[in-house]
Image (spheres, one colour):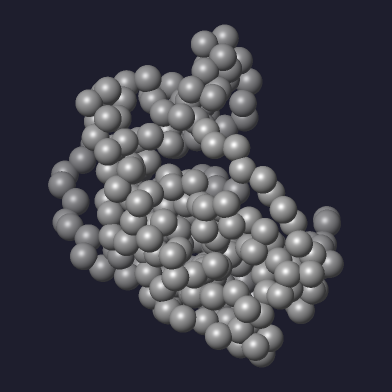
Length: 257
């Protein structure tokens, strides 16, 4: 832990900030990472049902990502209209998904009393990938794997910090891998409203079809993410404020039925 002052400057000239954007993440087509899927081995009927739920869930996320791309493209265009010069940026390559073990263990430790008391049974969602079972199974994470993930995390923290030596703010799609990266490295992020999906948006599948509450359908909000350097919250917020005032999306609200 380190004490650091937070000095908010409402008059900071955000136009002087060095801005990057995750070009590859904005241009990546939904499902590209799944193109090289291997043939699945034989499985029991229960396993087949699980795979089908996962497939439908994956397809739902891909459909949403394809639809949401128009909002990301519009955001980049709006930033350019504001006079922002964005330079392509890229996060360092590390096996971030393998480090999620640490986030899982940390979240389970934070809710340890909930698990030990048995009150986690009161939570509505009790599926294999829902938080109650994530907290429970985290107790079986091998200590050796946790230490190895910690070593990799340290390298990732140094690598991402080096990227921010050249930028004050980096613009990113909310659903890209930066979400996992910044959770691991501690770099600040601001998520802003970026519009509301229209009636033509892909509908969310039902829970029986493998969907979940994170798959937005028609009338649900979309967002955009700005990332900052360590202790760079003041610059990050000044830039976010400028985008917010230039768009007005924060004044929009989904229709309640």
